[in-house]
Amino acid sequence: MVHITKQQANRSPAEWGFDLDAVLASQRKAFDGAPYPDWATRKTQLQTLSALIERYADDFKAAISDDFGNRSFTETTLAEIMVIKGGISHAIKHTPKWMRHRKAPTALQFLPASNRIVPQPRGVVGIISPWNYPLQLAIMPLIGALGAGNRAMIKTSEYTPKFSALLKTVLSEGFSDDQVFVATGGVDVASAFSNLAFDHLIFTGSTNVGRIVAQAAAKNLTPVTLELGGKSPTIIDPSADMDKAVARITNGKLINAGQTCVAPDYVLMPRDTIDSFSDAMIKKAEEFYPTFAGNPDYTSIIADSHYARLQDLLEDAENKGARIRTAGHDDKQQLAKERRVPLTIVTQTTPDMKIMQEEIFGPLLPIVGSESLDHALDYIRDRDRPLALYWFGDDKAKESRVLHESISGGVSLNETAWHVVQEDIPFGGVGPSGMGAYHGEDGFRSFSHYKGVFKQSRFSQGHKLFPPYGPKTEKMLA
Ligand code: NAD
Image (cartoon, rainbow, N blue to C red):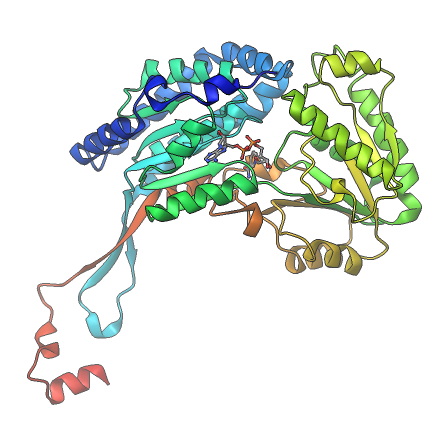
């Protein structure tokens, strides 16, 4: 087991090695002393962050891999380091524009007064991150928070202790504790952290814990951005290019061994193509990963408890009549020893199976027979609004229906997952998959207060609005 031990999780605050209230107080004091960092200051901070990530990239890859058992170094480069680099360079290029005061129209009766909108840092931002992409999901919110001129406190996951310790050391090399602080530890720390009176709190994690965090934040009236999970559906239309669909769905499902918030959770497709699609998926998975055990490209399941959870989902489905096909020819004991789960296709599914009810978060892909777009859209609308939705097809009219008649956090068309790394579109969930958004300008907006400012003109005839009211006032209000 890689996650924190029970003894550690039950430590008293005196044993944490830090005082969360004191850190928050010091950050707020420092913020009050410099409440509007200029662009030069923010740019230096973003460049410092970039340099630190670059300098310690190999250490992060090793620490994350140790925490997982094995995490492909290439996947850490692709899905964490490259995403962060893209986020920082996009923020450096565009933040000066986002920081600008924006002129806003003024209603006729108030002219020649003027209106503008002034984006202002919120103050101290709390960031709670999960284990699955531990670096990306701690740093991407930090980019938005620093770009918007805030200070930040980060709580990382107890499932990635080596990564968390490294992040703390690395960030303290470039930032003082009153600028950026990393709190490591278990659920005890996370719980105390979510009860702090931040000026904004962004939580990335499961829907269940998201509810707890939102309740804690509500007591302080702290605004929250919740980046949660859920079951992201994939619809395959008969008009789809099947070879491309198979390759892209296999890739989206198997990166990080399916432990991805936007992984395609299940597929909806016509019954008569399920068998050929399943065969092609298995073949593609074996082409991508000639072995699953011992393969440095293939990521392990994070912990024994999650490994057991995935086995339980399969057992439950099998007991309820599902058909299960597993890719590869690895020795089962070796797979279990390395906590590796090959791509597993589950067909003949029914809604009562746990695999059709819970977020899978692993390389299991159930398929649901669906003969029409109407059926697929009804199936999706009958369930929680997902974080992502994927549609494969070449029929423009149907594509338009999918976009307008389903609600999800985001969408990739003829692709899986890549909408997440586009810095020019928002990333966030909806309903049980989250609230609010970040990345690019949406991150800047989430971590800024947009202050409405009305400026009276020295040429104003405002006295017409003063009492005693008379015809002049009536004329102005008419
Ligand atoms: P989790 O909810 O178990 O934990 C996330 C964080 O919350 C951790 O730092 C943990 O310490 C903290 N936490 C745990 N209990 C807490 C409590 N009682 N109060 C306050 N904080 C608490 O999630 P996880 O297992 O780390 O991550 C997997 C989940 O996250 C999946 O549901 C996945 O879909 C979701 N996720 C969402 C996104 C997204 O961007 N929307 C990205 C990655 C993961």
